[in-house]
Length: 328
Ligand code: AQP
Image 1 (cartoon, helix red, strand yellow):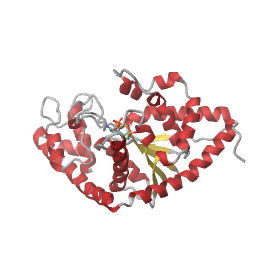
Image 2: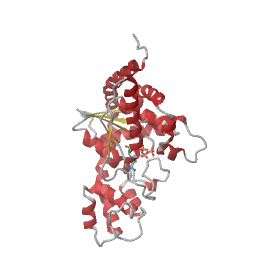
Image 3: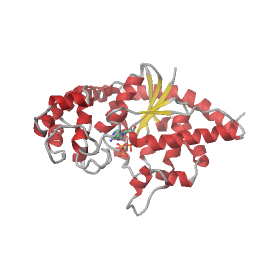
């Protein structure tokens, strides 16, 4: 069975972008692949986090995984910090990484832009991400478009390791949705929708109540004109909303164009909100049930135990190949 690994940072409230770009595919892949899905809490601390908020967001992301349909009987689900091999292989991969290639990462440039001081963790985090994937020798990594550059680095590091120490790692492939791999901000279609955006009107959070969703979508910026037509270059804002519509309603963009021919943006946005609400309402109900049940702790413990078996063996193999003296 092919292996799948992916993770999401508990760096804010999960958004519809995270769901469409990544989580939806996690759920799809768990039936046919051996899957490992993590809440990457060690990545979240590469930017400042309040301890209480980090704890809450970490549990929230894990509960949202379950609410979205990840089944712990099919996929191992765990917190990154519960499997210490991630930090250890992360360090070894940092030593394999070059400053120049890390400096080229656009996410680092975006997140460090205009800041007086930037943590070193933010700079080396792509090496940790590479280690996350390599620990499970994953074949496929379901991610949104914004993570493709980090995955390219992962592929390079895997090949670099294999070149130096002999073939060991697979070279993983990204797995992205055809439409919706990059959901854009509701207030600015030149920026991706992001959970850490300080403006909540820029994203739909998976836990936004129905009325908040309706309000955010009715106020979402749209291009001038009134034609509901999919043209990401010429009409980026309406095309972004059409991508969201396509996922939530299970329709193609061509079907949506036909449905709204001659109707203008108003009817489209109103129905879009109802499709998003219909998708998220049952997910939210399951989420609150999961939080109340207290089952999360044991699911995460079991997931970390399953992951540790594979991660621990990889780490030993890597250290042996690199020339470390293994414990007797
Ligand atoms: N706007 C998006 N459209 C499609 N996919 C997206 N993803 C993120 N934003 C979009 C995908 O969701 C997963 C989450 O990855 P992450 O939590 O490690 O961080 P990220 O990619 O940096 O996502 P955010 O929401 O923008 O988080 P912050 O604000 O903390 O940086 C990835 O698979 C990502 O591609």
